[in-house]
Length: 375
Image 1 (cartoon, rainbow, N blue to C red):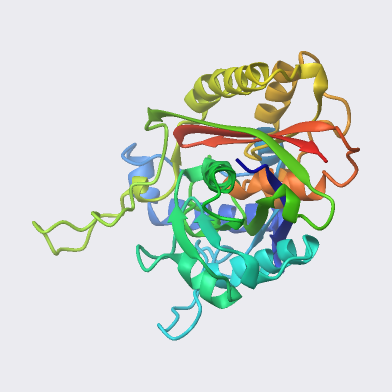
Image 2: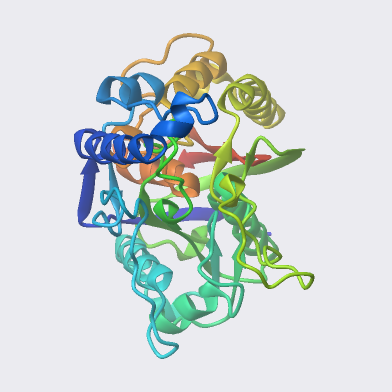
């Protein structure tokens, strides 16, 4: 058995930003346009008018102040309201590969490791740009890595589930080094025309390099334990799968709202938080780690209120500054990548022996936790 460690992380950040002010202006223009078009139906009580959004509402509901995106022009156009990403030829690298390779190269550089030494790549994300061939295999080729690669989708928990899979293979000796890469183009599956969620997501890519402890060249974190859990719920979903068009019809499909991101926020808040807090506390207890031993919680970045609740529940007190860092005010919800961004940006200051938990959670329901210790 080999000891797996995290020796490098990387974050690709798009160069386009949408502020809350820009987003609200575009959404309210869309709402005014639709309300004008449906004025008669609204007056007759047949259609509900679309209410305005506001910067205050967004910050209060989520803690988000801005988000990075791959394309802002389409999102901010009241006549489009979605990113306009150009269609690529089969001879060009996919957009997720471009994002993922950037993050992978940064993780490799931090670990002083060459891509040719990597023998496993897992592309773990909440949405993939195609069914096959695997995006992970394209990333493998673009990097010049060896071994094998495959895609994984566990929604917002994809990164931690990918880390568990890679860590298990390193422990067993089947691979020496692995990259878990999370290219999340969340803007493409968000319904920007829905006031209740139009502010939630942003785009980013993260990468985590895992290797055997004896092969790590620089500073690293020992992976003490990993644990995953799933429990079915339809409260967070996206029905736009490959079965959307059935053989019974070739007619144009209606504009179904459930073909984009859907969430019953109140139920999710009520049901997910007890699952996640119980999961983390049970995990650390089973390996002999007490809440007071935890120096940091790198949590899924979905909502500030959720993270504040979890931090207090796990630690048994209100977290002090820095103990439970948030990055969603700048990045928004980036699905599986959020906890890895937090870990990448807020882990260098930990001392040898300091212990923390990386935890992501979301649709499924799913929860993944990784307990690490600074070597």
